[in-house]
Image (tube, rainbow, N blue to C red; front, side, top):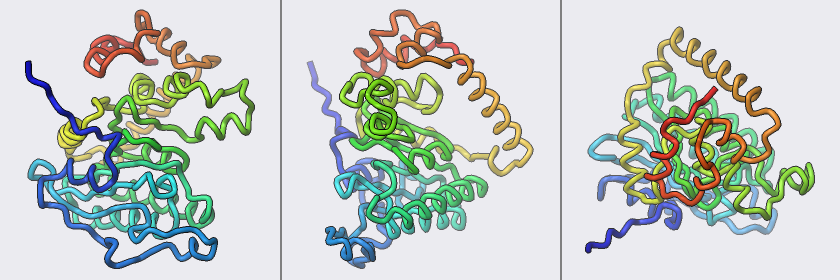
Length: 302
């Protein structure tokens, strides 16, 4: 019996993810550590800096196709977005709108805005959102890849939902407010952040896939993310056709409204899964990705 070794996306850092996704030797980094463009704010707060400010950006080839890529370094300040971090990501997306690659891959690993640079970070998020939509309007698909330890929270959670497609693994998480933030503001009765199973049933990749906030669910393997990204790199014609884009947006709003009404009062992912007609929803967290996709293939969405 042969044993298949998979390179975990979850356990890799930003540079390992890029190296694993792109064709060998094809990556060219932009504004890398050697140029030492660091945050202008952290030193004033006696905080350590990183020469890449916690994000790696550049271009390369995915299965021979030219793409731009960004990978957040979750080990540095939780992947938090500050002034330079945000500017590098915004610049990459603007480059995409100008040079028209086959797509942009955003490997998100972040808790949101860097609190040390809150105002600059919030401005950066708005600039990233605009640049994301501008790239899509130019016909460039922007893909969010989420399977890291920090997931995608805060403003970058909003950015993920601005993307053409969201690709997640079960290990990834996607939300606006983090579990600890919800508990602090609303109390443990509203959300117990220590209940890790609950956290993943509400913010994890399986749940986000089931409610159509992630369009693709893959195993925790760099190759699986690479293949899913390659498959998703189709021209985003709806974004450049204003009539089609408006119709798609209106349909999306109608679907979200219907889901909010249908799932009103649900306090756990299990309750939503049951409403989707999934048999024995409590077993879903125990299934591997292939079995999970088979078990939920006939789910119903409002």
